[in-house]
Image (cartoon, rainbow, N blue to C red; front, side):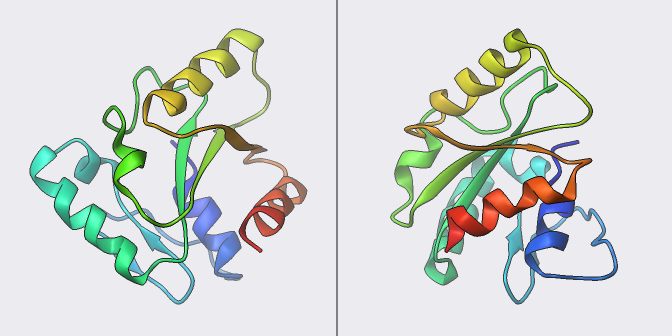
Length: 132
């Protein structure tokens, strides 16, 4: 669980948690892409085309994931600013962080911009600072 829906709920300032769905969802402030789209190479062009309406992109990597969410160097095809965000729940080890960081760097992201505990809403403020 990467936390995309949780982050989208925060960015949309929604009182009701946004549901996880199996298709691309356009909202006022966010567009969420499900993991199954990222696992299918023939969907990459559709994902890349989304940048036409975006001011930036968040590449979200859950700390406990066993594999990368994104293909190698995928972040380099975007013309909009791309930010790397690592998410976790409860706690993590330095090894967990190092592994998640390497997975994001392998996607072509230059640096990790935020590390967010999904159980602590106050940590979402990092996203406001990043995106504004």
